[in-house]
Each structure stands twice: as structure tokens, then as C-alpha cells.
Amino acid sequence: MRIRTTTAAVVAILAVTVVGWSSDKGSDSEADATRSTAPAASSAADSGGADENAGMPPEPTGAERDAVLAAIHDVNGELTHDEDKAIDAARSQCASLDGGGTNPDHSAAQRFSYDGVTLTDEDGSHINFGLRKTLCPDS
Image (cartoon, rainbow, N blue to C red; front, side, top):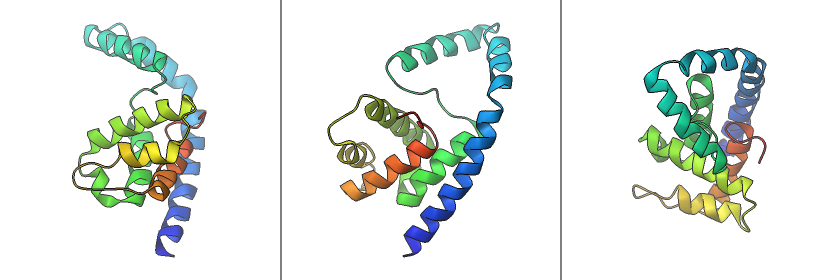
């Protein structure tokens, strides 16, 4: 019961975060244009384009990153000890969700079973729910 209450609270917070984030999208385009003029940023932009072509969303930052990590942490707190690993798994799972895999819940459970944590397909379902509310809403 506590997990459902926590999930409901996180989803409510994420919904507000996503709405706020999507209203700022126009300013992100200007920031991307500014970053693309810097040498280091252009190589990051190049790899971002390859990731998008593979169905992977760009790496989240700021409030969006916090929302993704909160959604993953809600399923199992051990999964976010290595935040970069959790974000990489989330981006890969988004690509899997976009690809229309036959069992995305099982795929998420397998993808996020690392560092001694083993997840069930039900856990994978919760992860997919959180990812669809944050990092990959178009899936």
C-alpha cells in the first residue's frame, strides 16, 4: 500500500514537472543553438543525434533527470546508487518502448536488474509507467 501511495505522489509531482518542462521547450532550442557553436558541445550534439536515430532520447538534465531518477528510485532505491547507470538504462528502455517490443515489462526488469538487484516483470511495469511519464512520453 505504501508503494502505491508513494507512486501516486511521484506521478503527481512528475506530471507537474513534465508540464513545466514542456512549456520551456522553446528556450531549449536557443540554448542548443548556443551550445552547438562550442567545440565540446558540437561533439556532444553529434552523439545526441545518433542516439535519437537509434530511438534513444537525449540524456536528461536538471528537473527532468531528477524526475526520471525519482521514478526509478520509487521502484527500488538500490537502482539509483549509480545515477549514470540508471539514466543509461532508462534511455535504452525508452528505445525499447519506442521499438514496440513484445514484452516491455520483462525487458525493463532485465535491463534494470544490476548491482545485485533482481526485478520482476511487475517492477518492470512500474519502471515503464514512470518512464512514460518522464523521459519517454511518446512511447
